[in-house]
Amino acid sequence: MNKILLVEDELHVADLIKQCLEDEGYNVTHVDDGLKGIDLLKNESYNLVILDILLPKMNGLEVCKEIRKMNSQENIPILILTALGSAENIVLGLDSGADDYLSKPFKLIELKARIRNLLKRSELFDSSNTKQQNDIFKFADLEVNDYTKIVTRAGEEISLTSTEYRLLLEFIKNPTKVINRSDLLDNVWGINYEIGTNVVDVYVNYLRKKIEKEGSKKLIHTVTGMGYVLKED
Image (cartoon, rainbow, N blue to C red):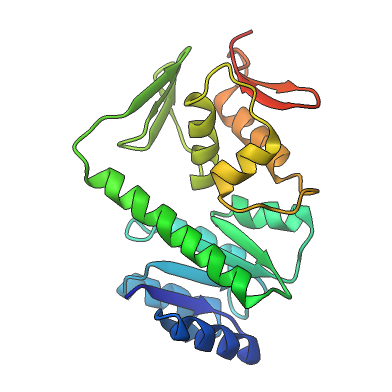
């Protein structure tokens, strides 16, 4: 049975979510502030965290960052619930280490779909880590080891968030191919986001800043009106 930690201070929302997910067979633990969530994660294992942003004592973005610092929890899927539904706030949440977001108010059927997707993705990640294999992808002086999850350029290790890593992996698995934004949303985030969101453009910029430092050649190029491509100048 998958264990889910729900960190939500609106009790009526928490009760609704908890009842819905328990009816689906999940084991749900609920706490109403960020510090309680961190304390539980230090001592117990969960398969997924559902995290509100506007929390007492420690807000959801800070909680998310703290979770990613924990060696035992660095790969746990995090789904953010937020009433702050602008693209900027959504990207801020994702950049804090979240894997997905859902804007309030939301439909329970969509929440369940997001959870299934995140758990499936996590199971695939875990199974890949148990295989004795060494999947290495190289392009120019950029290297991605999908077994160890280590990224280097010109031999220098680059630290990426989980979302940035999946985005880079999509590019390096499809070198010189122009990939449109819709395909990136589907393949990297796993859910069809609102078509107007600029989350792909923002994350491509994040990725560029990390892998295209001053003095290095540009690798991720914009193809106007079409998308992005990994190629050398």
